[in-house]
Image (cartoon, rainbow, N blue to C red; front, side):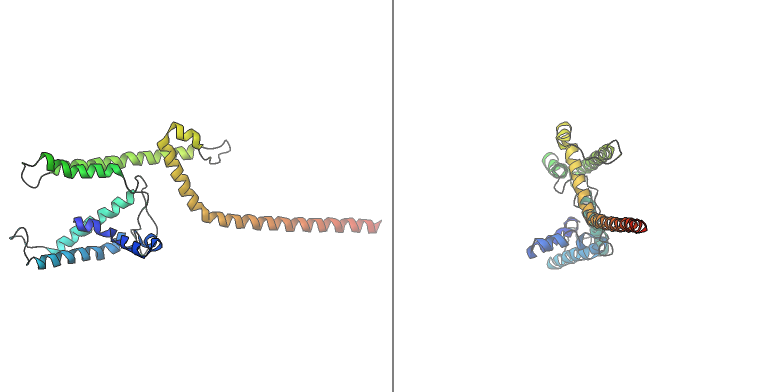
Length: 247
């Protein structure tokens, strides 16, 4: 399961073809529900080869490998990888290639130190303080580490929602969305300022394409107004000319 949980990141090999290929393919096929079938099949096939090279021997002689069950466990491990990547600000495309939409919970950074501290502690502490206990040991430490991860997610999700709420509440008297003052926000709440700045940058990227269309719409409206003004002037000149002729 450990190999299967790390296998989706094999797409980093695209980096050897250059940064463009790495950017285009990272968290693509190997991080999708469909791609996991192939990734897990490769992992199980690799373990089958290792089993053959060892003379079809296992650590427990009376327990032959059940390859179908191993594939199911490998797929569950791959799902856990997608879930972890979903929580950070990069996101995943789980429905690729049928749907290219990115999904991101956006509550932790790609490299989150707190997560590594919790998980590494769950591995190291039992080895230091539970050496005399029979195997398997460290279950309590593993459970506490997972609970700490869930608690961190809950705390960061609360912060994320609070930042979005603060962003929506900052408005002019005319109910127009107001961007927060960086100096005031950075002094009062640095963490909130970072979250707001990230959200504004994200909205700016999303609105960049819409800006092109809105600019074209404004240009079209200006052209129509100019045409209407010219027609009005021509009509006024015609009226003045006809009046002079009648005199």
